[in-house]
Image (cartoon, rainbow, N blue to C red; front, top):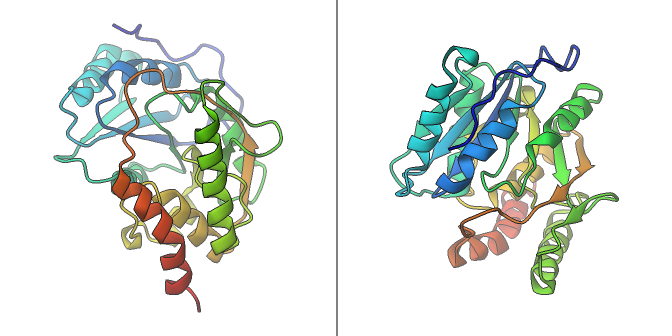
Length: 261
């Protein structure tokens, strides 16, 4: 059982401490990782940070584990963990749309998207927030491929090649100018999410990341990349199916045709 942590005694100054941040974490069979993820998020020096776990009906009880963690916090951190229980595995993109929509309804000024498998280190969030607070960026990306970014040593050559090719391909088709166009660790400004119209997004799977970047560029909001170290997942297996890989290959052309005007 993970240790339940109280609100940190050392906080960042305003405007960090004042920022209403909701971290959206989609989950499917992440019971072995979710407690540590919540614990590390709870230790961040951001008193107004909350976490929304969007669970797609995990048979391993991920949602129950997360809910129990939130209950153990009690009065130490009321409302820190919120659980959105969905009945089926409906795709990463749709999970994020549901979670981001709810995060805005919760009053979030800034919305973080983060994987539950701990490949994204929560400790980068204050840095991402600092960048968006000090710039006009609509979204800040935790990037593996800008100078200073890196990948876990466990990544084999074929994974590095596939990831690098995917980013080259997306940028070649859409002209994004984003080095890590497929990244899933991002911090969004509320204003941009409202402008994009989350209910209009069409990508069901991992190509959601590309669609969001493309629409942000079309809306003329700056995209800033901040270097991160991308860890190998702690436990469990990747959820990316063959169908989602095929969708990811098709979506850049669909987006370019749909928004050609």
